[in-house]
Length: 68
Image 1: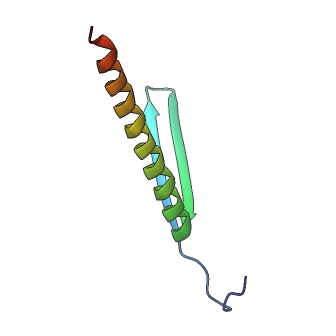
Image 2: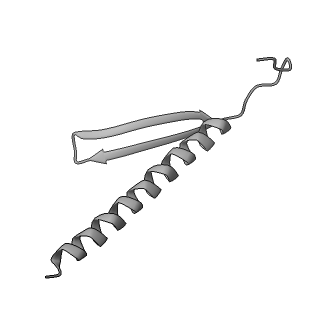
């Protein structure tokens, strides 16, 4: 890959801290490039779309099997 000198990809950072009661908690940091954000969005939309299709088929098949 041939990049121009001094040109670096933009990084995006997100931090989250979650407290669960007095003694438990979670802290996470994510650092991702713009291309990575596009990839993550594509993966999430694919999973949501396939889940919607599976639920639609399951509901349709279940409704048909209940009819006498």
